[in-house]
Image 1 (cartoon, rainbow, N blue to C red):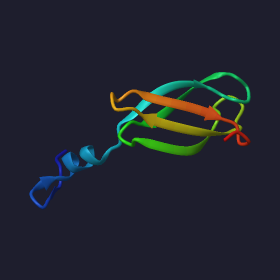
Image 2: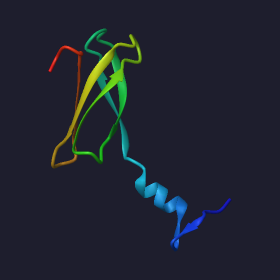
Image 3: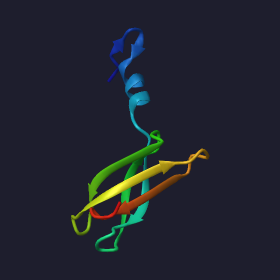
Image 4: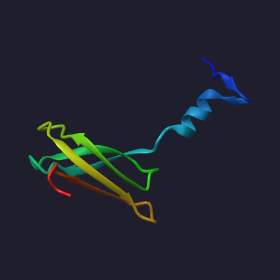
Length: 82
């Protein structure tokens, strides 16, 4: 199976460059306290989004910061926390 050339570039190679760098990070659910794994796009410096807990299914506010050394800092908060 080959790649489709687009503008002199293989589509597969272009798709690989556009794929986010997802890294698994362990955090704890603010509701049930269970450790959960979230996939974080490490190519984005700062992000905030809602993700349901894999254990209790309640919505968590996920905040991600990437420092200048590339270290990920992930915080899971309840809906009512800021």
